[in-house]
Length: 209
Image 1 (spheres, rainbow, N blue to C red):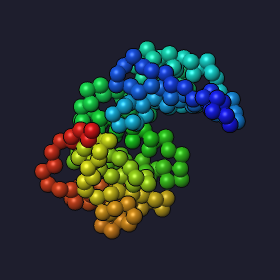
Image 2 (cartoon, rainbow, N blue to C red):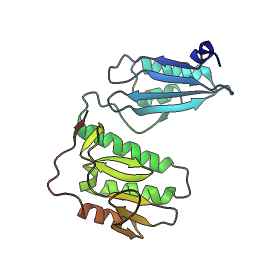
Image 3 (cartoon, rainbow, N blue to C red):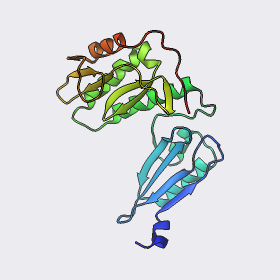
């Protein structure tokens, strides 16, 4: 593929909102289809994504993103746009960024297409229901749930790791390789042990920038 052809496969559309990165638009090379991704710049995490074979719909999404429309309104303007669950946090408030990440993680777990979706969602929901864990910034590594006392881009890992599998067991470990602290038949039991192993007197989540 020539450099000139490659240029036609990618485009960006800036937003009037400073807390949104330019919308990334990619054309598929072997099929009439386009993908989009809209991020927030601090953490580089997606607020919206989606794919469609209708270029007119891409144009509607790009216009709404450029104009600074609310995320729900972008989806209404172009229904192919998928909302990731994250929301705009213009002031980079760490507590709001943490809330946004939990919201995205819960939506991802609900939408996951996998044989172990039910177990993974149970784990995420059980962790979110526990105030001590909900107050921490969540992230995943190899689908294992971990926690941080700072937001992205510079995480500060704290506490144990929670994981599950297609067999319906829930593990707690000091790393995601092995559940060396225990295995349980319910997510609630695993979460309780994780809370027990948290350091005392954790303060509020701080900005990791």
